[in-house]
Amino acid sequence: MILRQGCNIVAFMVVSNIAARRIRNGDWLIIASNREPRNALRKFRKRWAIECLFGDTKTRGFIIEDTRITNLQKLDLWLAIIALTMSWTYRCATQTTGLSAIRKKTHGYRGKSWFRTGLYQLRRWIIYQPDKAAKIWIMLP
Image (cartoon, rainbow, N blue to C red; front, top):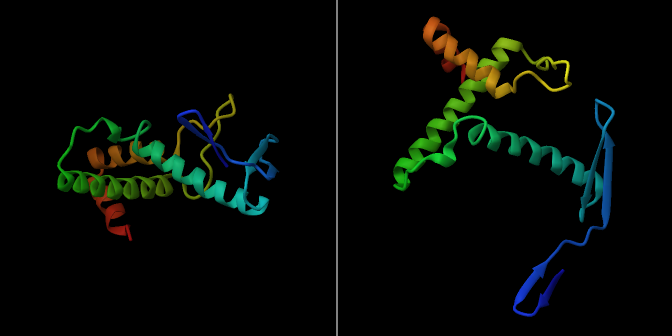
């Protein structure tokens, strides 16, 4: 719904559905949406994965927002390199921990993210075991 207030236009969403689900630690995940509740939870799950990826490429990882690249060809190349490095990093994480979850610390949060786990392992392998790092690179699809 859009309202015109003087010269300003104010837009807001009319929420018609509330979706809730208890998550593993016992807390509730509550989503207000204009979509059917089951679709809202599924969409939120996908969206959360994308948000985590953005965080890994931005503030928690490569800090790509600090680049001063203005040439679009160079920026395209830089983003392609980051995409390949992200794939390599996640593959290193799965090689290190398998598909099991990363352990939580006493405060209830994971010690490191998948990205950070893979990045540290990749860095170690490049420095101390370059053959292993290359083997993981070759395994990328």
